[in-house]
Length: 189
Length: 313
Image (tube, rainbow over all chains, first blue to last red; front, side, top):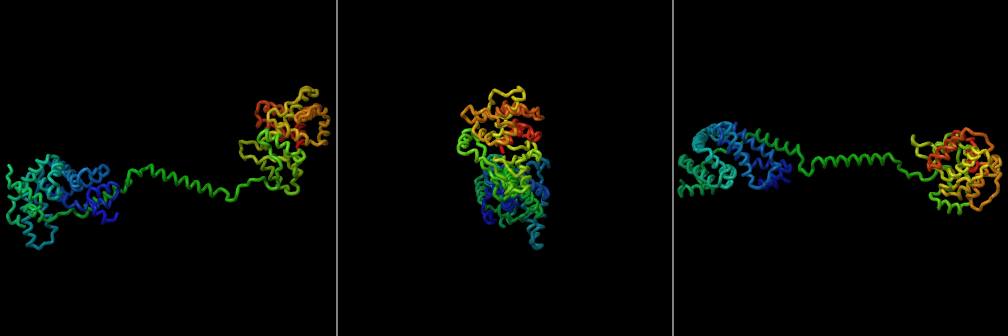
């Protein structure tokens, strides 16, 4: 299949094609989801090294489980369900879920802004990071699943194994707390 | 406890218009390093590269293809080994057939009526075949050189040249079984044996044509014994044709042969003659034919062989 046609397929079709041996479909799938998935882990772990470890673990499990993939739900739900389980296991291994500001420094290193702009962005990122760090882990994950994964309330509930009301409550508290934690200037950006 | 404002803020967030979303998205979009991308994609390609594209084409499919290839190559090699020209269907060069042993008794009877005994003549190879071809022919029919009849050595072939036997170490190198000749040999041998054991002329008729019912051809073959041979072997003293049928005439001639052979002394091949008759009576016609050919090879001068050969010339 031509790359343009592969690009027009939805995620489930790409995954089924990869299940049947089409490596090009996987490349397209990976390109669509690698950034959000990486940031999902980056915002919830102590540093990029943990985020990269979990990031690779999810893709490895996806590759290994491709023969058993059944397109019963949206691919995003399937992907972040795997990610949620990997994150839970990681937290259990770490005995806690610490989040620091080291990820912010790494992200700023990659930007091409000037010194003043870089300093302003650094302050803004630190405020957002602190606001996220102050959220309970469940509320932070619900917020990231919506922002990075694009999951709906029902899909957040399915991915995290809770009922839809709990997912809605977690997400509502996360949004309210973040708004209250951020400066008005940050919210006007 | 949620307020209506909180719900409104959640709806804006879900709609993507919340200032919280804008603030979050303003952050740098972190991406995994390139080496991680390469490692993941390599793992994905390796996973599908080491396994079949679909379970429908598993190892049975591969085995089927391999078996087809093996059979195809074997068939091509077999065709390449076989001669490209038409298969030889006729006799060897210089050999002409004028009669063929019938496959059924009825056919034998019918053809015996159509073919006159005089037509069962011999063809000489002297005109067409040199001595080397005679040697080749002898090799083809598997006949030992010492067993080659005088007529063949002289460039004369019997009317019914046996087909070349299959060259196999498990098969005797003799001519194939000829029912007419075997029956004639049995008839002569019975009278010969009777004369040996009783010491007097046999009064009981030999059970001729009992097995193959080819009496007409046997009669014709026996009739072809020329007068000189009968006189030389003492077989010309036929006590007269007392019956009308061909087999009765044959019996009469066979009796006469036995009567004349009784005077002969015990020959070294008598045991083979007795064994041939035993095999014939037991229904082992192939064994009887082999014993007869063995007798012909080991003792070509035996009276029974002489009588048979003189009858076929």
